[in-house]
Image (cartoon, rainbow, N blue to C red; front, side, top):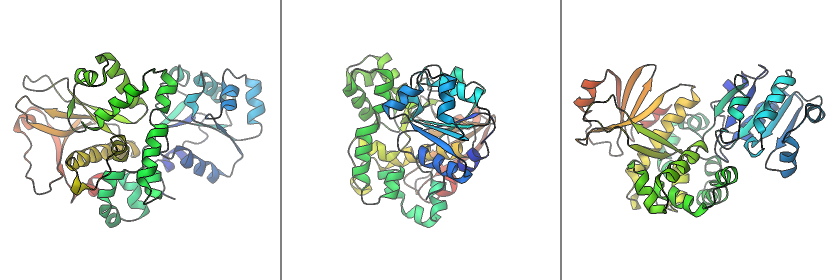
Length: 374
């Protein structure tokens, strides 16, 4: 069993009279991780799966008396896929406020902001964590650094979802099933989007543009939707932890791009499943794009697992000078270039270095990426 980096930190927050909320995309291992932690306590618990209709009905507008009968003498209540319950925020608040000796655990396949009122209901009452597919550090800890480096091509093609790691040889089938069965499930069920095909086309368009700046207007033309609809769909995909956006870094220098966006996938396997391309790298034209997506997403995952708070951007000037990843952390700026071709020389633009007090510069390639991500 691969140990998740967040486990010890989450375990340290048990019985602090606050809810523990773990969000993440479908099938990243939220339930498995929390069940391991619950088992470790050796305390009695009740598990409620909100994918079941009767559980959703029970938890909707529930009374304290009904909660008492459900919790009984259990010391932990674990609510899985909580975002599927109407007004779940109020139910979670009731539990935290009225059962101070009971630890509430809840998972959600989105940021849970999709569920009406949850942010306000749990203000000051929760510890919240994002769980992503396996990180490089987690996989190295399970095997060793040499084995993980040898698996780089597999990671770029199949990603690091638990099923893709745990069932070698079946990655393609499992990823296609995951994408077709779950990718849009929460968005469609929580928002009432009436044109799922439009959303599917958008995700495919985004998958083909990783590493490139995107235009909402152009994307709208591709899927026959207006700019606001495209932006809304992307926001929902981001809340469901499928994709994330990087904005352009700028301090209003005249020669800087300011409003552009890049969009990446949290997992390269999901990205490849969306476009149904699992070809080996030697038969692909997008190896460099995949590597860039992989490094950017893995770096964000690594910082998330270390509980580091940072902001991420890219940088480009009108003269086409570019830096792949800008990290702003503790008031310091780090500039990161990502190169699939490890022999390619990199010079950071003097325009950027002169304008900003850059703390560190890094060039990441196939030879050194693991040391950067662990």
